[in-house]
Image (cartoon, rainbow, N blue to C red; front, side, top):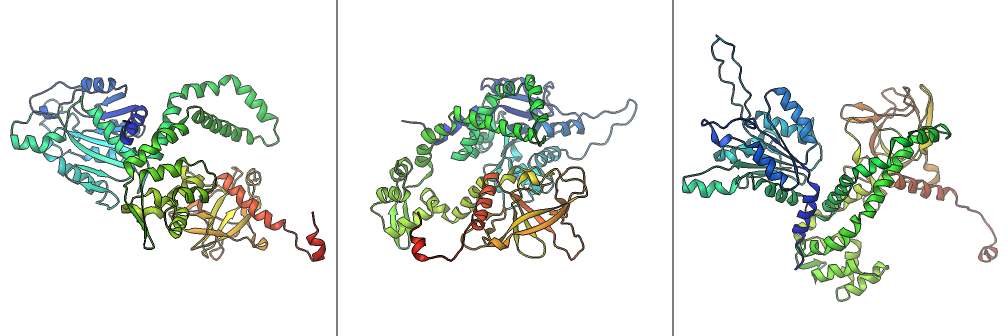
Length: 533
């Protein structure tokens, strides 16, 4: 019997996970009799992960600066494991009275680290992270979980609190609270807490299982396989981009009309190298041949699908047949495989194919799923860093602060750069209006926009380059990013940056628009028109 989808996902996660970091104030210290449950054996835990071919680092903080340094390290790690009670060594000057005991230190530093990993200011980083709180006090696991939920996540409904499992999670993060392994003599306590106590030897297995639960999907597995291929070949990529070619690169740059294009070429070359690597690593074939059918078997419930009082039995074999069909005419593909179902339902499924692969319990979410996939395929600015100022260029979508009108910039890239300081330049825009039906662009907040196809609808707006950068950059205005046009009185229209569209989608909009301009309308002999070759 072939492996289940979850087992295949575990293999992919195991290949991906490389680095695990621990923070514990008891690491590298001699054991004592005062709090043996809180002792932490750095050697044993690193040996346990080494057996699984993982890099495991253990940090013992002794000051606030150590905590700050650890925050940077934690952001670079695949999995973070934190002690709950962190106490720094207290120094008392000789001859002075012992200092008063500090305020209760439990959780203060741990919650601060979690916040730094998951949030930037008030916004989430939208990164996938697994964080485990690994404490010596097994009796307060539930209260620790509630404390984190209250202080870190403000008891938000966006995150699911599971008191029984001692966990907090969303689609992208999971906080798991577990206890260090210790002997429990009381039978009732042993039954209650033993399952939530993790030995050093069991920690690698826990990490892998919990990480896989977060990434056990087709798209996450594709991303993990791709990232693993890049990690394994990072040295080869560095070898390709050798310093021996520096002179050739500069020679190319020196002899092209627009020298700034030299750096753009490097981005294209690097992107092409990554794409070629993924193709040769057969990531796409692995997804297609090894994961899709097990996903259907494990994720899809064989149940009745109902539409307009008609039903059909959704079966694994039917879904697999649709995905394996070699018929390139989609209508024929559906007619052949779904030959027994009502034509109205068949047409509905062709128009809404996501519903075939969604269980009835999740059908109300399909529009959100489709929108998110749409954004992934269209939006370039998904990857824009938080502190980066967007630049006005081909594919930039803006919104007027005076009306609900949106505009897409169709100025070619070469005409959006190298603008002299204090010079003005006209930019070309196509207006878009909000649509309830067909649309061309979907905004980050889910607004559907439809472009105006009229040849006379094009708009020009003047902008001034205010510095030596040579571009028109957005400026921060409260929580928005604004492109300020030439005229800046309070009554003048300004424009909010919404997103940057991917290049090919932007180019398609230009081609669609210019095709309207190239139409030839004339009166002629109808007899002659019918004879045209």
